[in-house]
Length: 185
Image (cartoon, rainbow, N blue to C red; front, side, top):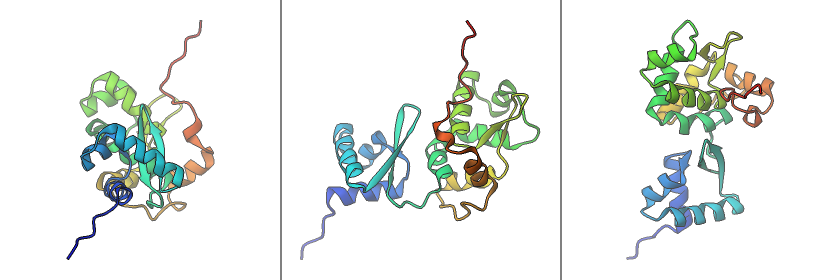
């Protein structure tokens, strides 16, 4: 009796279903292939419509098409795999909103790491700045953080505060990160 060996395409899809938002490097490691091979096959699958991808910093995050993640979780899942992002999100959940240096101190992170992480979490639409520049977890984002950390799917898209704020902001992914400073010269 012969065993059914999954095709390379099915192997890649299985890896992405098990870990949505995985980087090319993560997919390559999980399948035991080189990064070049993984990148080649992922891009072929992207053209075929089997997968989608989104940038996160310098990394490209890959998802199986129809993975069931809302746009907020698609940004949050890869970010919250990093321990420093989880620590900052948990620190920002506590009240009151804090300036970035105090938030970094509360999360036990270096200021540079906290600045970068805050930018990623703002881009993922989980953190928001008050008009005084203090950071806090967006109202309702604790549910997103918990779902992203556990790998669950979200059934509240369109009903939660985060998704409504996302829709009101109108494509916040295209906006420049709020943590970049420009010179006045």
